[in-house]
Length: 158
Image (cartoon, rainbow, N blue to C red; front, side):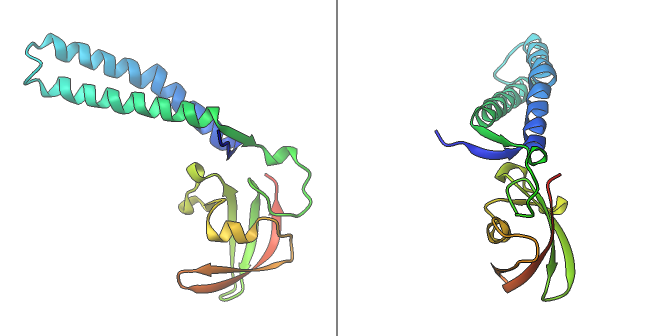
């Protein structure tokens, strides 16, 4: 069984979603099914079918989150000594040498990635190029728009 990396923050978000699904959403949809059943004929009861479909989605999501948490390798970079090296979970400040833009990224697991929040998947081209490098290093990244060159300005273990 393969374990996949996840930050402590990402694991906490999954646990919170699981708790909400189990304690709020599941009882709500069970109540909706009971109310729809009380209306009579189930063959033509759209409310019943919609509630059952939602129940299936919720149960599927619960199983998916339980599986992810069971197979997750939680990495908390705040407990590691900062040696200036880019690792999973760290926040890295880079300078795009092609246009002098300063960018800040956090290297996270696939499920946590969100480019709008500057969280890059550890499997993305930029993250793969950065991991293992140190402050002051220059890295080249093959992007769809061509090769980009970045200089690592700062590595933070937040």
